[in-house]
Length: 343
Ligand code: CP3
Image (cartoon, rainbow, N blue to C red; front, top):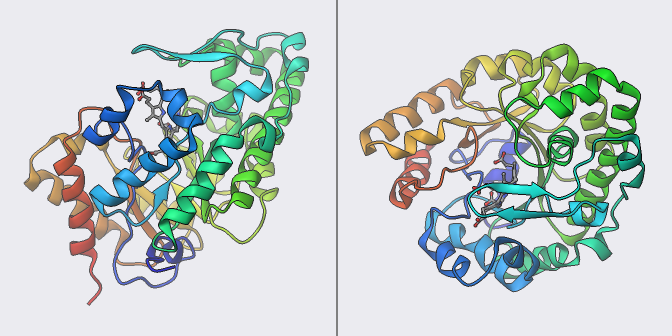
C-alpha cells in the first residue's frame, strides 16, 4: 500500500503525519456529486457499481484524504431483510413496513450478501482495482442498535419511543431482534471484507440516546458479537455519538479504533478508552462553516490533545453537513497534514 498511514494509525504504529478522512466525505456538499445526483436517485447510485465507484473516488481526488470509504448506506441490507423503504425528498429514509410486533420480528431474514447486495461487492472490487494500492478502502455497516432504531421507528427519530418501548417492555423480543440484526451485520461486513475492503467502520450513530446501563444490557452483547465474528486481519472502527459519558463501556465492545464525537475532549476520551486502543475524531463538523483561522485553530487544539501519540486518526465527530464549503474541507485535510508533520 503506497499510503498506509491510516492503517498504521489504526494499529497504533508510528506515522509521518496524522492520517485524515471524513465521514460522509462523498455527498451533496460536492459539485461533482451533485452533477451525477441530478440524473439518478441515491439508491440508483448505490446500486450501479460504476457510479458508486466513481463517487467513492471523488473525495480522494479532490481532497487528498488518506482513506476512501465505499459509497453505500447503512440501510442497504434492509431490502434483503424483507423491509421496504425509500428516501423521501428532504425527509431522509422512510420505511414502509416498520417492525413493531413479534410477528414482524419473526419475518426478518438474515441476508445473503452475494444475492442481496451484489452491487456493493462489485463496487468494492471496482474501487480496489482503481485505487491499485494507492490508498486503503473502508467498508462499513450500521451497528445493530442504529439499524434497529430505523426499522422500528420507520425512519429517523427524536425520542426513539417505539424502539425504547420494545426494549423496556418486551426485552425478550428485543433480544431476538438484536440477535437477528447482528447476524445480518456480520454477513454484510464479512462479505465486504471478502470483496477486499482494508478496514471496516461500524456506525452506531444513534445509540447515545441510551444511558450506560441500557447500553450495557441491551446493546453491548450484540455489537461485541459483531466485532468478534468479523474475519480477522483488518482494523475495526467502533464509532458512536453522544456516548462521551460511557466510552469505557463502548470500548469493551471491541475494535482497534474507537470513534468519538466533539461532545467529549479528545484527551479525556483517549484516557478513558485507554492507550491500548486507537482513537478517531473529533472536530465539530460545523467548524467547517467558519473562517480559515478558526478552522486551523480548532484543528491544532485537537492535534495537541492527541499529543503526537501513535494511534490518532483525524476525522470529524460526525458526517460532513450539506452546505459545507469544499475549500474548507480541503483546507482541513491540508492543515491536519501540515500541523501533524513529525520532524
Ligand atoms: O462517508 C461516505 O462518504 C460514505 C457514504 C455514506 C452514506 N451514508 C451516503 C449517503 C455513509 C458512511 C453513510 C452512513 C449512514 N447512512 C449513516 C451513519 C452515518 C451517520 O451519519 O451517522 C446513517 C444514519 C445513514 C442513513 C441515511 N442515509 C440517512 C439518515 C440519509 C438521509 C440524510 C440526508 O442527508 O438526506 C441517508 C442518505 C445518504 N447516505 C446520502 C448519502 C450521500 C444522501 C443521499 C442524497 O440525497 O444524495
